[in-house]
Amino acid sequence: MAIRIDRVVTRGGDCGQTSLGDGVRVSKADRRVEAMGAVDELNAHIGLLEYLCRVEKGDAESAEVLRCIQGGLFDLGADICMPPKEGERRDFVLSAASIAWLEKHIEEMAKNLPTLTSFILPGGGQVAAQAHIIRTVTRRAERRLVALGGECDIGVRFLNRLSDYFFQFARKANDNGARDILWQPRQWS
Image (spheres, helix red, strand yellow):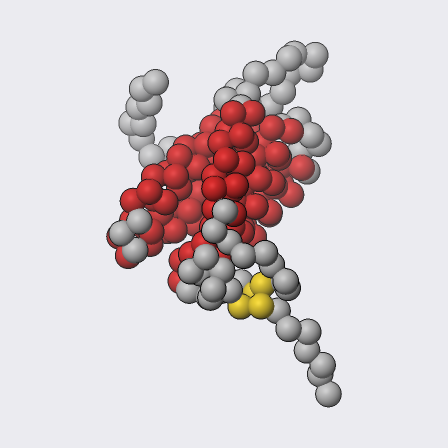
């Protein structure tokens, strides 16, 4: 599929409106636009993690998986930007295969991770900390998609699994859990 973008500056949004995939103009504060923006923000955070893995850590395998996830988020954005038509069955770009693919990668990472005996604090190292940021941004994108009323259930399932993926990714990045920071209940006096 060839995409051609001739102009970036259109001035079409100068009054606080934007176009959906079907051409309908809506407020930039619309729930659908909010969901698209949350997915876009998530994708940008993953772009930083991909760079850290590829350039800083020399981990081409993780970088490739992250690029695949970014492509899946573009698919999800395509699904979100098209409002459903009443009474029409909808085919989504994102598919159940994407969820199975994520689950396979989550299980693969879990093989080398010790069982958790406590909650863990976000952090450990730079790559793990970025993965934890992505995990929380993923949850926000999921909440924004849920606010659309279940019209994109496959997307909600994808984001739910994606949050699990980045939790495991962070643990893997922390030397397979060895550098995880375990939460210790504090007694404030």
